[in-house]
Length: 464
Image (tube, rainbow, N blue to C red; front, side, top):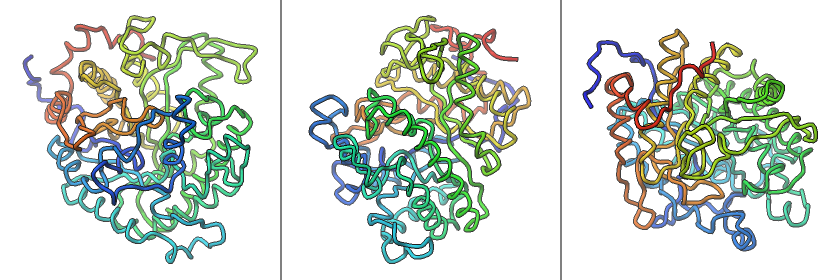
């Protein structure tokens, strides 16, 4: 296929291409004892024998992961070589504050924090910046210190002594964590995010046992409690970070485009936007994570008023076709880039803040679908820019394969393949494709791939 020869760089010099990573999913590695962090709820959850026996978690372990903690320089070299301009990373609360902070004031943490871990994070951030890239730092990406959340005790004994985001103390403890990080790292961070996908976090552990998310109980009322505590945590964290830094402080949020019966769609969209509506005056930007759509219909028996239709979005069979004829990923997620266009446009009309795509990617071990996924979703972003919408950046999930929560090491989201036996990194063809798109500043040179062999970008499905 001939490369695009046009003169127009639609994404522009200021557009931030990059990749998103997290702490728990990337930091630990098989041949790196110093990378191991045993102090989080997810570490305990992933190792629990009964969880493994019952198929709640995979039985693979995060300490067999990609080892970003000591191998970060190679990750950053790969990102810079691809022409990326930004990397999003996460800080692990359990690494930085391994001991309880309940009896401490916000400014009284220096003697109990892990200074070595903070200095290591400083080195990671400085290495990103020294390679000419910006860094976005996210403070909470699902995992919590075990002293704040003991999911086995919650799950087996309804003991909420350490109740995680259902614990009324959680937001105040997050404030302390945010203040410490801002104070110690605020001079070198370009952008901060308080939380990643709080709407997912508040839902999965208390409404959806099949997700494998701790504490894996069915208590819908606690999903509401967790949501409210996460909202309060964002507000308190935002307040503390703004005291310590002049850098923007935002929120990263999971979004789906929603199709289906009109009344059900209205209910689902209202629920999706509720969290952001409550914090919209205390965020400097929004990070939008998009993977696929949802298709809904009304359900009078449901407490939320609607239900998801199987065979669409994230409810498909793996490596097959959705009910609409779209290819699906190793996870069974439908490729639907029109949804990214629609939800970005809807979000940018609703909120007057800068918007980034902070996650977008596909579980695809063979790399057979990822090229089409990339081109389709970047076409959606490029079309919005052509129409005058100022999308600020695109961060792919992810640079490398990682530990995919309850699915463990089985789902491969990386532009770069990780050999989990020896830790070696090998770029996939899609890595070089994204590198070329970044170089050209447009997907126009690859637009035939939107129709052949799959018709994955139907402009009649785009909203006005």
